[in-house]
Image 1 (cartoon, one colour):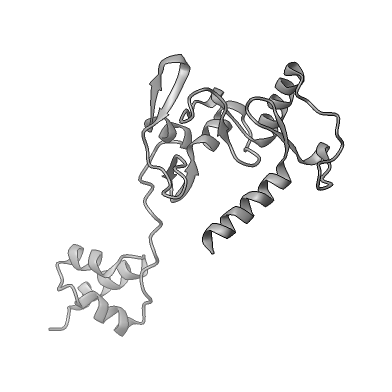
Image 2: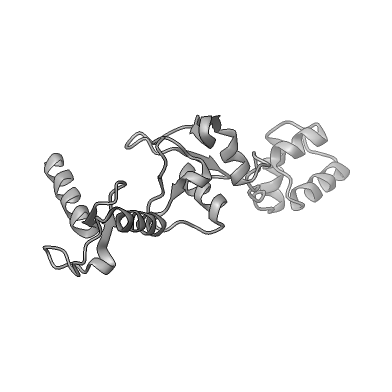
Length: 195
């Protein structure tokens, strides 16, 4: 049954204003297929896609905090999800995935981390902002520890010729090693395991 002129005019105005077929059908008490049929007759294109609804009014830092639980000694335990591959604490905020430690680092320092962010306290799973460090911070702190412990080395390059000023890293106890050689050995080990 054709619609009266007044209803067609109202329907056309709604469709041109961006209403969906369903919204128009509900508002005008029409059959659910009628707006689509008149959209084609009137030459009106489909309704524009609606932006995704922001499901979280929280900031990234606030959402991070919802997945933490305080422990003794100012440590924070992660209660959220972890990656399957290596157990890295992660969460999603506004369709983007974040690692918990990178958000903690940004909260503590006000800058984005460089390289991996790891826990530098005695609790391996801690995500407290004051207890995480990125690669440059970690290298600097461990170099200071090596100097205090007397384990620092005067070598200018490793056995494979990598400049220590650029590639030297330190274990948590201050022992120096070549970061590039370590990465190469890890890749070779993973390749051998995959073969």
